[in-house]
Image (cartoon, rainbow, N blue to C red; front, side):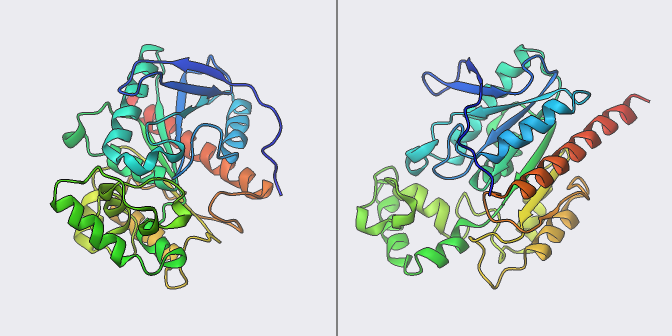
Length: 301
């Protein structure tokens, strides 16, 4: 089992954003030409997903690629997700992209873990958000919150009904009573965010296995830059009825920009705890980033 407990250095970058006092934390070679922005899942924030430090270390060793990793503190970080939204996340990420462009970072790749993958999907909706474009995307553990909830909170319909009622009454931003919130979420949850995460067709509902072909084609068709999609083979938040290999193929079929390097990370769960799996992940990320270099080179010739 890998350990994330050892001390590690970061360079803190304060920058202007909609979120007061925002910082991003850079890991690796701080003079790199390019940047990976890492966005974690629900209840995550900077430094809570240890595998990204393995990725950063391997990227530092691959000096020809010249990437460092930035962990971002969003308004939705830690327990803030319950009263936030994908829209706010996109605004916060776009502010970091703008800052990194002022540092002359050439390529910027957005890397999402878990619910961070929903941020990647939402980020591609440039016409809606008018956010700054990036040069590639990595999605690790893109799972459906709605379907995952069936495992830990199967009787959630009453909570959804109350959320829908409050939204209809203009109380979308009010937090639901504690007894109506799945305990596993461990945070105050607004009516809007519960519906977004848990209702079919909610704003967060990008990865459910029952989405129709029109929806899948439309949202994956928004990618105009390459994207790497990596499911975890033994993800504990996937129900037995879901075929992750089939979902991964479905996404590859939906858009030729979904990399052929996409697939399942062998022998690991949602947060990639084992060192062998982390090394596999880091290697695959580096392979993907090299394809971005090759693509840029082919466009110049």
